[in-house]
Structures are given as structure tokens and as C-alpha cells.
Image (cartoon, rainbow, N blue to C red; front, side):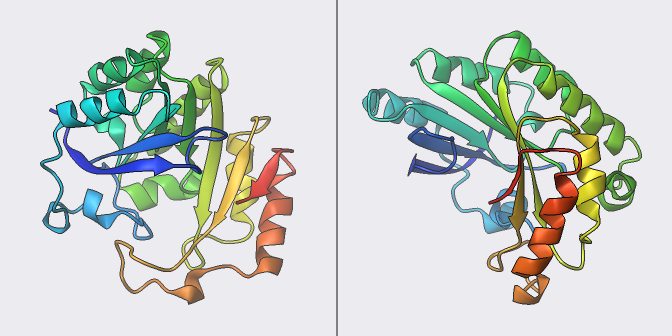
Length: 231
């Protein structure tokens, strides 16, 4: 059963060009120390797990004509086997659906695409390829990520790839390795780490890259993905 960890009723940023509502699912298969939603990973930090899906659907019905889309994010939404049921109910309201994912569940992702349930996919590329097995404790992690990349790029669904760069975890040269994984993709966004509420509370402004470093990261990415941008 899907657990909802939070709801943002109106967003102008999360679905490109659309007014959206964001549904945050609880739980994630990863423990990225720079995660800005630790309450969606550590149950003890979350006070909103009792958000009822029927209440969310009722709210969406009331907002029909005022919002264009729903963004489903987490955590990692694809940890739930029944995520397609929730998305189907949202689609019945004539709303667009954007899915945020870390790419670790390619079979579930393919199923959602085959069912024509997604209008936009945003996938996080967490690390350069050599770092995936080490940082995720999953020896098959890179294979899953590569499969998801292939699925997304061949899906016909609008998409973007993105990476949050954290000094001390990522190196400037990592952007070339990461962009090589998504060579020829439509969009790649480079996001600088911003200090704040994180799973590892010791991360700080010293873990952010400066403008000159970000430009080097961008230039490295553009060797393989022309439409790379800093966001």
C-alpha cells in the first residue's frame, strides 16, 4: 500500500511550464547523504504518513481547471508495486503526470510507459558509473540505471536527466562520465548542492561548488549532451 509522506498543493517549478501539485511518496531504496527530504527516508522524522490518498484525489477534483499536472516524487515512487493504480486515478481527472525516479526499477518504469500513464519523466543520475556499486551497496545498480536510461530515451515520453553535484562526493570531472551514460539525451540539468535539511546534517556550504567549478562541470557535460544546463 502506498504511503504518502507529504503534499505540496501548488508548484510552479516542478513540472516545466505547468501548474502542478506534488505528491511525495514515503520510502526510498537509497540513502543519499545529500537528500533534502530525509523525512521521506527515515520514518521517525515523518509526521505526515497518514495522508489519505482519497483525500488527495478529492483535492485534485476540486482543483480541476486550476492545476495542470501532478508530480509524483519521493523518496522513490517506484518502490511501490501499486503505483500504477494511483497514477491511473490521477489520469482519470485529465491531469498530466510527471514521475521523478532514481532509475533503479526499470521494469516498473517500462510498465507505466506501456500503460501510457506518464507525460514527463525526470531521472536522477546520482553518480558516475564506477561509483554506483560502491555508493549504493547494490552490485547491479549500474545495470538497472543504464536500462532505465535506455527505456526513457526510447519511450517517446518527454524527459530530463539531472544530477545534484556535491563537493566531497562528486568531482568536477564526473560530469563527463555521467553525461556519457546519457549521451545524446534531450536535456541534462546540473544542480549545485544547496545546504539545508539533509540526511547527513554535517553537509554545509563547503559542499557546494563555486561558479567557476560549475562552469567546468557544465563544459564537461556538454561534450556528450549538448543541451546541458546549470539549474
